[in-house]
Image (cartoon, rainbow, N blue to C red):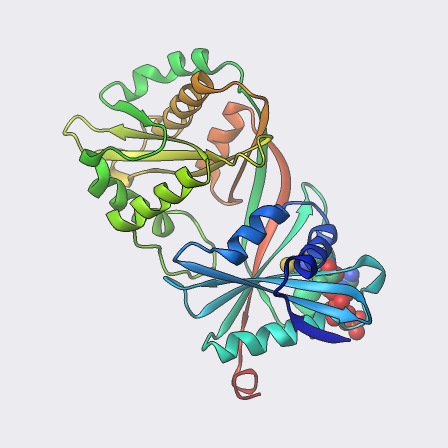
Length: 331
Ligand SMILES: CC(C)(COP(=O)(O)OP(=O)(O)OC[C@H]1O[C@@H](n2cnc3c(N)ncnc32)[C@H](O)[C@@H]1OP(=O)(O)O)[C@@H](O)C(=O)NCCC(=O)NCCS
C-alpha cells in the first residue's frame, strides 16, 4: 500500500468518495464543494487530500484543512477507510502521513472529528482516535429542522415584548457600510464566547477587508445568505445570526453562528434574531430544505432556542486533538 498526494480530479473523486462512504453518518461536505476548495481555496485556508492506494484501488483517504490565518499550529484531518479494509493498518498509515505533512509545515497538533447518530455510542472513529493518542476535547450536537419553518409569526409575537427596546435589521448578502466595523467586532467575539470545553482555539479576527472578501466570494458562488442583527437603543450592535445556502445543494441550509453580547443577554434576543432571520429568508424563498446547525452539547441556552424553534437532534460530534510529540517532530 502506498500513500499518495491527490492532484487530479479523477483520483480525487474516488478518494473523496471513500471518505464520504466511510462516514458512519454522512455529513462530509459534498464532493463538488470539496473539489472547488482544493482548486481555489479562500485566502485563509488551503486544502489537500491523501489517498491510500493498493494496486489500482483506493482503500482509504484523508482530507486535510490547513488554516493559514489563525490556528496555524493545527492541521484538521478527516480520515476514511473502506469498510472491508478496516483494522488492517490503513488508517494508521494515513495518520502517519498526515503527521509527517503537519510537521513538515511546522504544525504541532492534529484535530479530528468523529460522529455518531444521536443517542448512540461512539463508533470506529472514536476507538481509532483513542488508540492513536488523540484526546477528546469538545462535544457538539448536530440538529436539523424542516424549512420553511412553521409557526414563526406566533413565536415572534409571543417574545416581542421581551426585546422591545431593540430593533432587528436583516440583510440578504452584504453588511451595510454603517454596520461594518461593529459587525466585524461581533464576528471576532464569537470564538471567544461559544463554549469549547477543553478545546483551545485562536479566535478568528475579522477586518472589513476579510468580511468583504467572504461576501464577494459568496456572491460569486451564488450562495444564499441572510443575516440579522439586533440594534440596541444607543445604535450599537447587540447581536447577530447568520444562515447560508449553496446553489448546488438547495436541499440544505446552514444555520451558522448566533451571538448576543453578554451585556445584552436576557431579552430573548437569541430566539428573536433566529426567528427574524428565518422570516426574512422565508419571504424570499420557500423552497423546501433542511436547516442544519451544530452547537456545543454544553451550550444549553442555544440548544434551548433551537428546541423551541422545533429543531430535532441528529448526531453527536466529538472533537479530538493529538499533540505531536518530540519524536513525531523529529521523524
Ligand atoms: C477510523 C478509521 C479511519 C480507522 O481506520 P483503520 O484502517 O480501521 O485503522 P487501523 O487499522 O489503523 O486501526 C488502528 C487501531 O485503532 C483501533 N481501532 C480502529 N477501529 C476500531 C474499532 N472499530 N473498534 C475498536 N478499535 C478500533 C485499534 O486499536 C486499531 O489497532 P488494532 O486493529 O491493531 O487493534 C476507520 O474505521 C473509518 O474510516 N471509520 C469511519 C470514518 C471515521 O470515523 N473517521 C475518523 C474521523 S475523521
